[in-house]
Length: 56
Image (cartoon, rainbow, N blue to C red; front, top):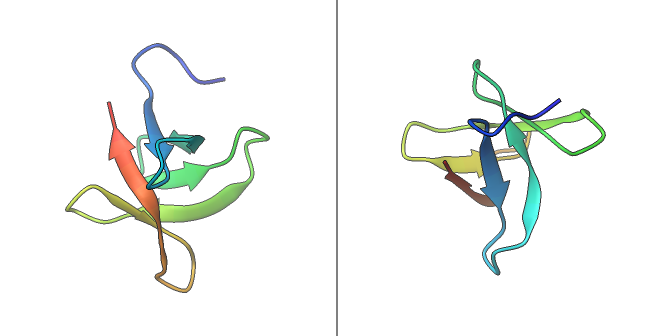
């Protein structure tokens, strides 16, 4: 379950699409892994396509 300190992922229009765990894994709100994060704070899917950005 996401906590208050969990980073979230938002798409380019600002809509929340998931959370980021401590290992950089991006999960949707059903806790299904949908991608990962890059060092520059961008969330990408398994093909490397941009999903959005990570916000604290």
